[in-house]
Amino acid sequence: MAESTAPPSGKDDFESVLKDSETKVASFERESHGFIDRLQHFLHGNPTMVPVIVLLLSVLAFGLIAGGKFFSAFNLSLIMQQVSIIGILAAAQSLIILTAGIDLSVAAIMVLCSVVMGKFAVVLGIPAIIAIPIGFALGTLCGLVNGLLITRLKLPPFIVTLGTWSIFFALNLWYSGAQSIRSQDIDANAPLLKFFGERFGIFGAQFTYGSVLMILVFVVLWYLLNHTPWGRHVYAIGDDKEAAELTGIRTDRTLVSVYALAGLVCAIGAWAAIGRVGSVSPQSFYEGNLQSITAVVIGGISLFGGRGSIMGPLIGALIVGVFESGLRLAGVDVLWQVFAVGWLIIIAVAIDQWIRKISS
Image (cartoon, rainbow, N blue to C red; front, side, top):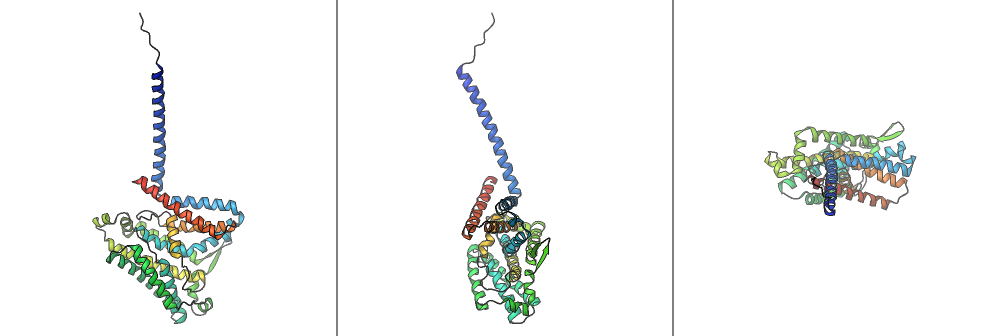
C-alpha cells in the first residue's frame, strides 16, 4: 500500500514564507550595506570628489536660475578674481588643519605683511623688489612664532593663534597708524606692488595675475604634500601625532616648518591682496580667517587632521564664489547668501563625520 503524503499545514506554509522573506531582507541589506561601504571607501580615498560634485551641481543650478548672465565669460572670470585672496589664505590654512591644528591669525599675518611692504616701498622709498622679500620674511617669522609657541610651550593651536591674531592686528594698526596707502601713491612710487592686480584676457574673459598666483600656490603645495617625505610627515602627524613620533618622525620640527610655510604663503597673499584692492588698508580682509576656514571645510579637508587633498580648498573657495555670485544674480539678499554658506559648512562637516564614522 503506497504511503500518502500529507499536505503541509498552515503553520509550515507560514514558516516557509517567513524564511523566504527573511532571506530576501538579509540579501537586500547586504547589497545596501555593500553600496554604502563602496561609496564610503570611494569618498575616503577621493576626498576631493564631494566638493567637485557640489561645485558642478552649483554651477548647473545657478546657470538655470540666473540664465546666461551666470555663464558669461565676464562673470566666471570675476568669480576667479574674487576668490583669489581667500583661496591663498585657504591654502595656508589647509597646511595647519592637515596637522589637526588651526590658525586664526592667517589674515592678520597677511595684512601686516602688506602694510610693511607698502610702508617700506612707498613711504620709506625702499625699492619694491627689496620691500617685497622683507614682507615674505616677516610672514615666515610670524608663522615661526606660532609654531614655536605651540611646540615649545605645548599650547593648543587655537589658543596660540587666537592670541597672535590680536598681537599681529595690533602691530598692524600701530605700524600703519591706522592709515591706508592710496592707490595713486603706490602707482607713483612702487607699481610692482600692484602687479597681481593687472588683468589679461582669454577668449573674452578677464583674469588677473592674482588668480594665476592662487592656482600656482596650490599646485606647489600639492607637489610638496604628495611627492616629498615632508608631505607624508604632515599627513602622519595629523592622523596620529604619537604614532608618528614612534616611527621616528620629528613631529615638533615638522610642525614648526608647517606654520612657517603657512606664514610665507600668507605673505605671498599680501602681495596679491595689494593688487586686488589697489591700495594698502590696515583693516582689509578682517574676516579672512573665517573665510579661509570655510573654504577648507567645504573643500573636504577634515578638521580632525590627516585626511584631505590640498586641492579641495581651491574648489571650496570656488564653491563659495559660485554661491555668492549665483545668489546675487538671482536677486537674493546678502543676508541669505551668508545663510546659504553657513549651511554649506554644516553639511560639509556632517559628511566628514559620516565618512570617518563608517571608516572606523
